[in-house]
Image (tube, rainbow, N blue to C red; front, side):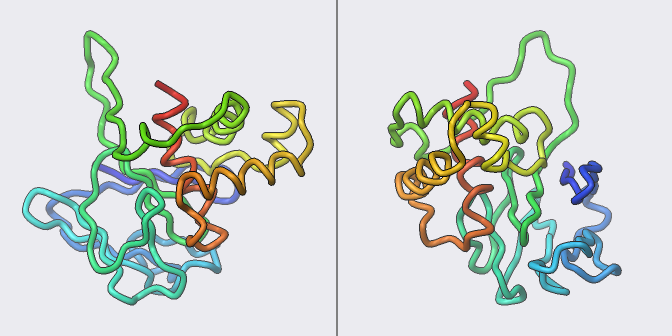
Length: 195
């Protein structure tokens, strides 16, 4: 299992999670195991990854100022991680991945709980697909910007903003900090628009 994420220059980073190093720190300090020194929304000591039993768990027991989110839900204490989860730390999205194994048929991506209950219009679905495209094509990437979505769909940035605001409500993300909403929306909508 490993974490994959991108820095502001678009370089992909990969951090292995192995049982022989069962505790990892996440933070802005250069000495952190998962160092996100470029992101001033990340606390110096933001969270901890702990190997418990056969699972990796993210722990944020009041360490961070801005909180830690898994698939858009704030972590209060501990949260078990699964392959495909997106951990939002500051403005950085860390995707939980595993080594690809050869297969005779493509693997089926599990549907996250609650995504089937959310109904969207065809226009909202197109916007969600544009939002999620970078995340789908390069796991760990940030979702598309408002300008990128507007350019792809041939609509105004104001239309993108208004549609996103409606989608934040529909996916019950309005209570999240502004910097976490887009990533949380992309994490929840990925299965909805790419299956």
